[in-house]
Amino acid sequence: MATAVLEQLLARSSMPRLAAPAPDDMQLDQVLRAGLLAPDHAYLRPTRLHVVTEDGLVRLGDLFARAFLDSDPDATEKALDKARGKPLRAPMIIVACCHPSEHDKVPAIEQIASTAACVSLMQTALDSLGYGSMWRTGPMAYHPLVREQFGLTDQDHLLAFLYVGTAKGKPRVREQKQLDDYCRRF
Image (cartoon, rainbow, N blue to C red; front, side, top):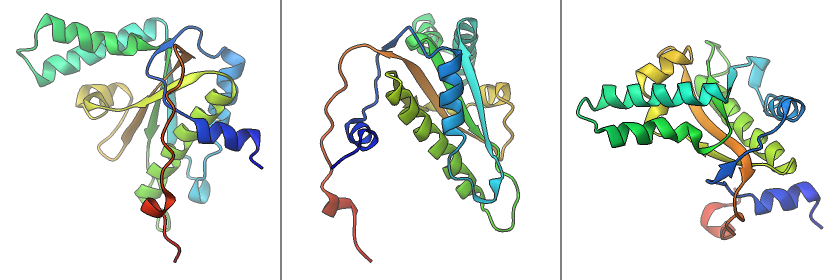
């Protein structure tokens, strides 16, 4: 018999259309704490989270437009407006970054996986509180201007722009995977 958490996980779906409200400060605190409990070999704590709301979303949009123009100096105003508007698709974005440490027993990939697990746990926490989310990356996650604004070096990674808010519409029903296509017993 499935538990409520298992039922929630089996029904999980990304929500591309999000509106206000976003989690309040107490709920956000719970979501961030849940995420930071992700597995973390040797407790290196590679994950850094940046919460973007209100005016920060506008500033992030301006940053996206500058980065887009940097990549395409011939960009049209329409294309720049589209880039500028992307962060405004939700009332909150949690930017998840990984700052791997040099460690003889914990390679960078494990630290990146820890940050990815943090994002997934935050999505589960958000779902449990009745909010929707959408994990996005795209070219902005790799653009030098954006990376610089989040304090990333060449060794660091921006893993997610986690868009957060109240879901508009119903989640799409996801097809259950055929386990034999993806799973083998060793």
